[in-house]
Image (cartoon, rainbow, N blue to C red; front, top):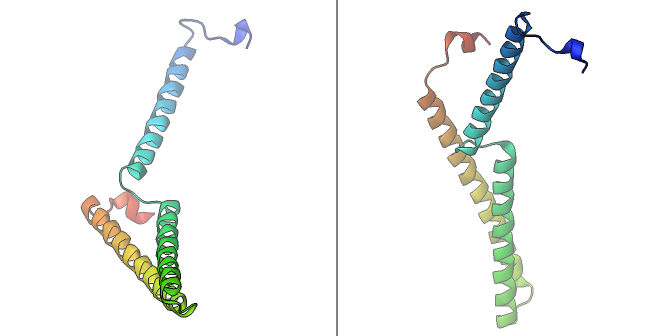
Length: 124
């Protein structure tokens, strides 16, 4: 930037600079509010997906582990492991349904708490 490009006091360009600075600050603050609402209890797709995936993996891992231990202890390989795999899959899907219902209940509660949309928001 050359010396000729810099605003001089009293030439009126300082007002434009201040307007640009205040607009940038407003955009920054709006962005912070959006991020803060996500961190403050809102859910995004990645968080939901990771939660569901971890619950499925945990249910299957625990059930396979129990099945293998019982098979080794009782000498019934592979029957108890297969039984517990089926039980683990059923448990995993039950957890997914339970989590989805819980998230839907929270979403509806947040929507009800926010109240009806303003006239501008309803029009799209």
